[in-house]
Image 1 (cartoon, rainbow, N blue to C red):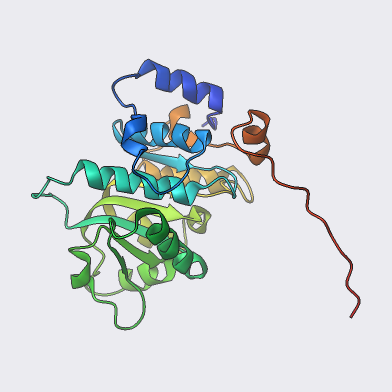
Image 2 (image 1 turned 120 degrees about the vertical axis):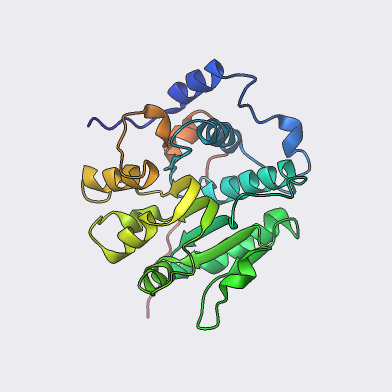
Length: 253
């Protein structure tokens, strides 16, 4: 299978084809207490497009530093506001975010900074984690280690019907034979998202693992499924302000 990773021009052309159908309106972002750069708004348009077409998700592979976490949170807040009157959900859980333990607190802090009390987050970690606490949560966040551990139980507490499953640092599942990858891929969700700044660490099999997760094992050739922008891509189009040059100072000890 040939790997096709969308560039910004391809994305704009694709979005133009669906203009008016799957477009995030600027006024819907006006109440957000956060500044979104043009490339983040572009990503929201792409996410909206992907959630309206099979396989209902995608791979957000922007470079680190381009605000993918903030973009995802804004999308979840948009959907929460959109579904505010939907009191009869067909899902046992709303959004499950899986990430390395080292960045879980960063996610929680960012959610609170962007959404305030508009998104209720439950941290499903630790020995006293209780799956019954997820039912009123907009976001449940846990770690790859917890998902792997719970998958070994006779009854997996996370074996629910989730509306949305989001993997951060998704390269964690690149080894499809690992217990972690298998546990993640058995989770049941309608929408699936893989977020990673390093979609290929060793070889193309890393990327194929992400496609396998996204497409439920049925690999498909579709350039729309992955959005990848590097820092230089975004800076060259003047979508974000250039970062200052890093200065190094020698320190003798």
